Image (cartoon, rainbow, N blue to C red; front, top):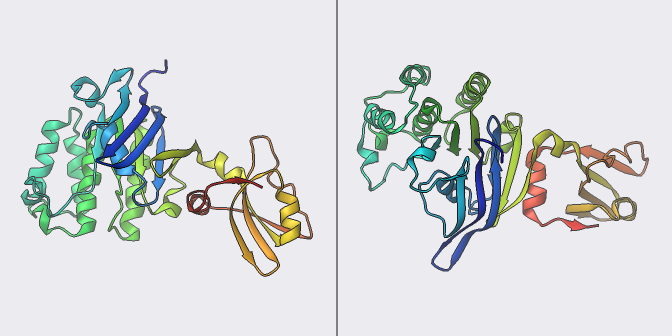
Length: 298
């Protein structure tokens, strides 16, 4: 067994008659930055809340280093889930001042780094005397980022950490994240809808669709084996026959298809074809292709 692995085994979650997660299996290894992406309602926040022991599973288990996570302080000390703050929360958090919220986080997080928290407060120009429910969405995101990074948790989970941040603040977040990752070797799982600018940060990408993991792969390896093939419909159909294809577009007699090549196949085998246009795709385009429509055999 690999050491210090955070693992989900046959995980499921249902609310009344609605199934959110279905027989999900996932291993998160130490020392990686994972991107967790999926459409609204795919189950991302639910998955992160169960992994971090904040929400019970309906079935299956979550373990850290072989130990159950649920109600296990020894395992939970290695995990931090810093989720989006709700300004109208009924549990009293919304009425706390930022400094009170950070003080509470320091009590609950075993490895809390106060110096780092203080430095990030200054860097983000955050007013610690403001109450949570008086903050802008971007400022609330900064609070969740500070908690996540200063927790020093071995497994740190962030749900939409850049929501409401402007482009400069987002760039600062990714820079700080990479600096902390390089220095500490912690594992980060980042759930985000802003895929394009985050794709360079993700070592591995996890795609969640309708409560199931449809893909978990090294980001660069994935992009290396996906291409968009376009041209006259009959030429495209002939070329992609037998390959896994998805996200077909048609315009008159022309056609475009996203192709997922198998390991070892040459994705640029038609690069010099006069009849076909072969183009690489971005992570966001792969996501749209896979989650917009299920892959099919061409």
